[in-house]
Image (cartoon, rainbow, N blue to C red; front, side, top):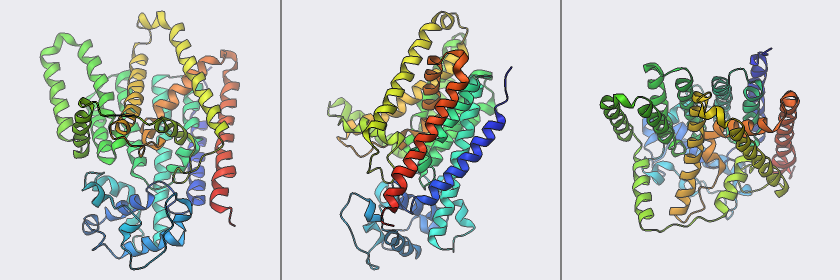
Length: 445
């Protein structure tokens, strides 16, 4: 008998809200990657004058932001030389203003306004209160992502309670994800929009595409890409769907091919300028053979995906990364075993739609990780090696991990196995929070 997972889902969503508030409260202001700059953009987006301001002619609250950085001792937790407060300093001495750094090609004002909209209710209040209000908004985004994870899983695997509960729980108890979704960053909104786009992709594959479904999918994809570069993997995922349907309906190629080309042209036309510039730069360097990937990039990408709190400058004990890596390898073994066991049925088309949905998930993960590794290799850089950059594919990663672990657990033990896995996730999350994160910020007290 199939048991309804909705009551447990509601509990997980409530827990996501509570744990998000815990992280948002315990992590001091500005102690997350780029939070000062991201908050500056979110607040500036609510005013046309502030959005185009520079460090020299910035709004009055720039001084409040600079003062707050030092009031909360931001340089105590950074691996940069210590600086001292000077009220006459320009804000650009302490915060990288994205408008100046990226010439308006990073994010967009409407997307940042969605992040900073709570400030419409408290724009004149204390700046630190404003920060926590925006943090609350991103915590709610995390709740939405976990809800979408449940929807995606139930759509692909209806009736499978192990996956329906395991995937949201794995996301919920990933400490780095909870930490960053409880701070201010446009990557959080990009993840929510990208996950919503993937949901409509999955819904279309499993139940059939409609004009409403296609419109939602394309609008969410465009919005995600205009929010942050971490969503640039989405065209590849949509391309897989296009190729699948072009092949299935190849007898209609006379209209299918032009329609596909028109859709690709529209996507390119409305793509962010930064994406076009990065593609051109990557092609030039790739054709010249001028690239190198530093080994620390994939290492830190993995470690900071799971747990490197703060500005990702301190690690938990290496043993825990090894344990997590071992469990990920087990999941890979489980996926291989699952493929072997179901090969005959897969060839017979028994899991045709599920296989298509999972193929999109795999392509999304490979593309998201590949873009990040390629960027670092082509630019001889180790800057963009943070796991948060692949959080827009958090749901596909969690789904494949849980699917692999599920295959390794005997059927009669799956309820117990799910409970054991969720307990392990919870204990790991609690350990990072109470043994590492809180002592790191509050040891002096």
